[in-house]
Amino acid sequence: MKNVLWFVVGLAGGFVAAHLVNKDPRGHELLAEVDARISEFTDRIADAYREQEAQIAGLVESAKQAAGDVAGRAADAVSDAASRASDVAGDVASAVSDAASDAADTVADTARGAAAKLSD
Image 1: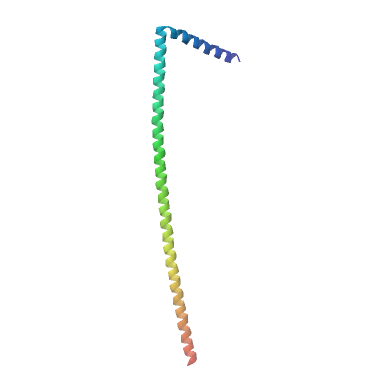
Image 2: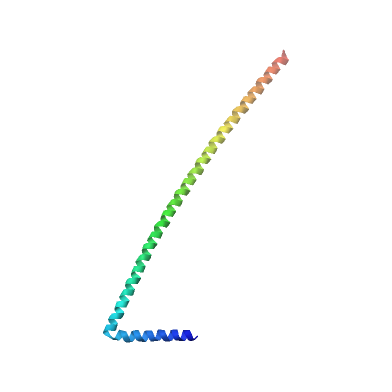
């Protein structure tokens, strides 16, 4: 509690001293110069902040574009794989159908041959 009291007394003393210094023309000039330097410093900090913010925004935009490109390429790869799988499935179905047809023809020919032998 004692430290808080000293802090408050220090603040009040600082305000009183600044008020008294500001009344004198030389003191007013000194405070104006300090204020100008503080304003210059804060302006530089603000400019640096805006510059960093712009750089980060550029990096984020680049990352978004890269992610979009990767997603597009992945979608194309999936589409190509699905198309190839469909083509392979169609080829397999055609081969199975041809094999079944050939087997049916062979069975029919064998049955006709057996029927002809039985009728003789």
